[in-house]
Structure formats: C-alpha cells, structure tokens
Image (tube, rainbow, N blue to C red):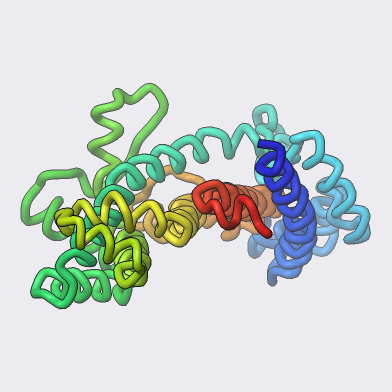
Length: 328
C-alpha cells in the first residue's frame, strides 16, 4: 500500500511540473497568435487611439512576463480571469461581466457528458471486438474487423460525421442532426441529441482500442501458462478472458486512457459540425475573436485532462502488473 501511495505521489508531482511547463508553452503560443483582440472587435472602424485604449483597459500593454505571472497567480487561486469580450462589452455600457470559469463550466459539463456517453459505448465495444478478433484471428471476422477499424482511422472526423448525418438523420430520421442541448433538458432528450456526435467519436476511438486489445492478447497466447491452460482442456474464450486478458491490462489501460483524453480534447471538429455547445465550440469561437483568457483556459483544461488521465493510466498499469508493483 505504501509503495502504491509513493508511486501516486511521484506521478502527481511529475504531473504538476508538466502542467507548469505546459502553461508556459500555452501562454507564449496563445499570445503569439496573429491578430489583435482590439482590432478584431473594432473591425474597420479601428483607430490607433481606440485600439490603444482597449489594450490599456484589458492590460494588454503590460510586459508579457507580468501578464503571465498574473495569469499564473489566478490559476493557483482557480481564478481564470474575465473574458475580453465580456469585459469590453461591460466597459461600453453592457451588463455585468462573466468570468471565464462561469463561461466554461456549462460547456465543460456538456463535453464531459458527451465523453461519458461515448466511453460507455466505445470501451466495452472495443474490448469485446479486440477479444473476438484475437480469438478468431486470421479468420474472415478478424479481417473484416481490421478493415473496418483501418477505414474509420483513415477517415477524417467531419467526413464520418456527415456520413452519419446522411444515413441516421436525413435518409432515416432516427436522431436529430443538430445537438442543441441546454440546461434543464431531460436526460432522455439530452441523450438523444448527443447520440450522433457520440457515435462519430465512437467510430474514431474504437479502432485504436480494439487493435491494441487484439495485439496485447495475441502477444500472450504463446506464453507457457496459456499453453498449460489449453492442455487442461479450457475453452479458447475462457483461456483468453480469464488467463490472457488480466495480463494484457497494462497496454489496454494506457490506450483507453489516451482515447478518453481525446474525447475531452479532440472534440472540437465534432462539436462544430453538430453545433454541440461544448468546450470545443467555445474554444473555436474564442479563437475567432482573439479572446485570450478563454483560449488559454481551454488549452489549460485540455492539457490538464491529458496529464490527469495519463497519470491515472500509469497508476492503474502499475497496480495491475505485480512486476511493476514490486520491482527488484
């Protein structure tokens, strides 16, 4: 137990250091984007005086290092700042400002819901297909599964999305083509409107997990303990599920964690296609108007999701493998 706790603390410390380094990269990259928020807001009516006024009001005239330290201080207190668009609107007599956290919270909730629905479909489906492909390797089923997964990997997300819209929303109106969900919507209706983007993401992530499950199990089938299980007269499916699968968990856990992270960070295209009000859609809208605080917060959430899920995968892989849990 103490060894596992030590491993968790080590990985957590490494994750925090990684997140700090990533925050520097994010801040420099976002502030290096071409264009300027003040010019984007003012459009053709921008004058040097009006641009300078907006930049001064938003603190964009301060040195880069001071702005980063201020942002880092806000991150440590969970204060992600105020949206430039909201602040500028308030300065010109609009309603009160909305913080970045308040803007992101409902969008992140929607993205997490979409990721959860996709994971509930994709993970069991991918592991089952991987086990069956390993069980019936080099058969017609195995070749068909490999062909299907390679096709889904090779196709762009937006192409898969439009194909599903054509067959499941236009030709056969089973699901709605637009995922215009909102707070207070019934769970069944929310699930129905999220089904097409969830199926699109399922086609994208299932292939990686299925192929890794198949490869991990096949690599163990020549092991002596597998041969012993076969000599005992156990059925092939029992040999794979009971004896091979537990020893193949480490690589499977890693690829599942990476794909779950993708469901949070890689949904930008899918959310734009289906007009899904998630964090990816907010990210695209904020990039268009150079709303730096929102873009930085979205990038930081994406990075934190990857780091956290990789940390979880490392810990689970170590726990599932006694040789890693008790190194010599």
